[in-house]
Image (cartoon, rainbow, N blue to C red; front, side):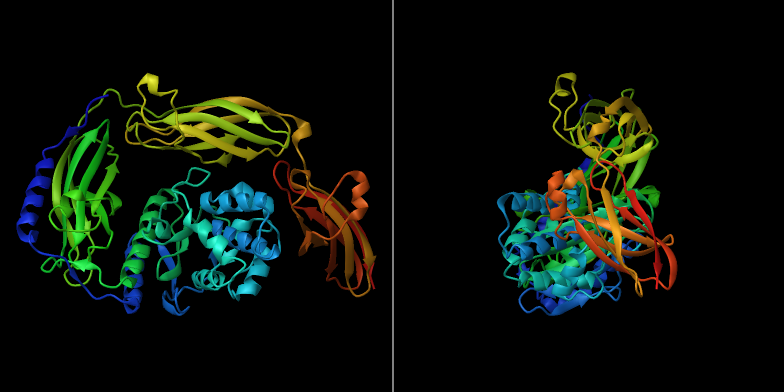
Length: 599
């Protein structure tokens, strides 16, 4: 591994810092006025910045002290897919169901679900009536189950205004507020699936909490979605985002969410420090190239608000390529010159060709002054590296649990950047079942000169038993290409697959159809199964099998799995069918069809 080779542009950092020091030394930061009245302008600034990158943001912000809406976008009532924001509803539902005091085991699981945005726990405790219950309790007019995606909690429809309203009313609900807001304060940098959830409300300082959501299923999001809901010392709010159908925009969407959130929160905090005379953004940057990746290290701030975390875009070769970041890292070199705050940034860029490249900074403006484009320019030389190669990866182990859950371990890394966490795909018989980030500890690779954390840990539910092919696909960084790196055969015992089961009878057919029956899934006895009902092949209703079912006890089936549903149907003969929606291993099942004549 070659040592980092600094390019000649590094000298520009020293010159720029010294020039700044001459003007700034001896000046004390001064307060600048900022109140909640500044929030709408901050929202507009953030949303406009996102729109310039093809990202649509939906924003609503409420005063935490008064409950007043202090700013929102015109589209704040537009329903979008909730993704993992639904987990807030799920936690609130169970807290209210248990009178604010959860059983210890359930409390631990739901707290982990909120902090790590864990999907398995959300699916385990999902109920069809959660969304409607919470929407009714908290008065959410644009929140509802997506009728075209039954059983998929991430498809639940929410709006930014509804999420902000939920946060305010939840924060004043004595059964929910203490537990849920504390759980949101524990939101982690990475989710349990390895996704980077350090964006938006999760990046704030001081008293804050967040719940994040993300996804890229075009059937209910229409493309990538990045959502952040949370609170600061003064505000409660939601910054929801949708983007073009291109998963590469996730990083840009995270940055845009963070930018808007920090703009809004900075505007709410009175008297941010400032330095008179520095109205325009000020910056400096250095760079070095290592193993095909160029790293930029610098700082940027606006003298009108030194509490602002400035978004920074590094534009390469006149905009032919770019990389974005936030200037929010500690900057002790500036603090030594009387400039408080965190203003350092770090960014990486993977070039596709060698030779000289021109890199310049594009910086937005805060308050007086103007945005700066094409400033602090440097030249970076990218040379050939014989050690460049395609990414490497291997599935080191698989296990199958008694209930059909497949657990996968392995590793993946890219020689172009051994400190980067690599994105991977897992395919099961050619079908995508996971997109884990290779970021778990890998001490086994260190003896081979591979630093960093590159471990893969993932799990998914098998649909059928028997032999299956599991393959690992690793996404390239820098030079090289994406590659399938490893495949292996995994045998799932047929007895570990639990399809849902159910049956029903018709008890009344006068003026409609009354169906009474039961359904359960052995993968999750404690979770009510969602039933989809069809009449003559048309979906007519959904219901939850959650009524008492003592008649199942003699067969060893505990819990409540009964269902009673009234179906609309006109006079004449009809065919009624019950579909049970699967949990865990197995697949959705058509359990029973019965003919009935409605009088």
